[in-house]
Length: 210
Image 1 (cartoon, rainbow, N blue to C red):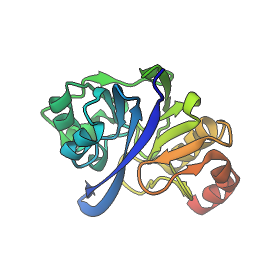
Image 2: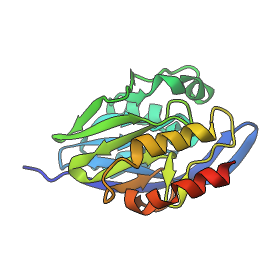
Image 3: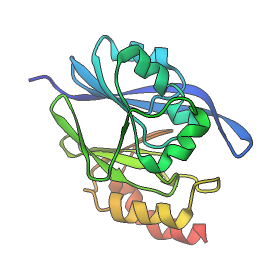
Image 4: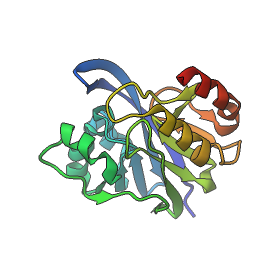
């Protein structure tokens, strides 16, 4: 049986919203075995992601949310590989800001399980950073892909359009901090952490957000 592994590719570009533009580095997560893979967040550079697949069949391009730095390369990667782009429908307004002429290929739903190389990833709807933000929990791999919902050091930003601080805190408290403490948190930007490392800081985040 093939071993499922998690690969990380870092791509660079910009994030634009509410009239501002910032330089960002994004994590692109590739989950799979020697034959097939799934991509979490096709950021910035479709060619680099396609090279990182190294000939494997791409089963899906999963968007943790629809900020442009996380979805910019999704249509081009889909065209190159034939894989569907999947997005939670609550983030369609954000998606349309970046790709107005190209709809996602499918919708993500809370509780849905995506399977790649025999390994299940459960969709957790975690709004707050964006209305349709999701995390992907892979219990067999002991990991959760959190996009911009949870980072090493705290929650994702909630200072821009479509975001809400009390909502992201509720999502983290109810959907993420209930996972086993040893679960590795693989984030949309920066280094990984664990649920156990972040859980003690929940009250600090709440106090800081008010």
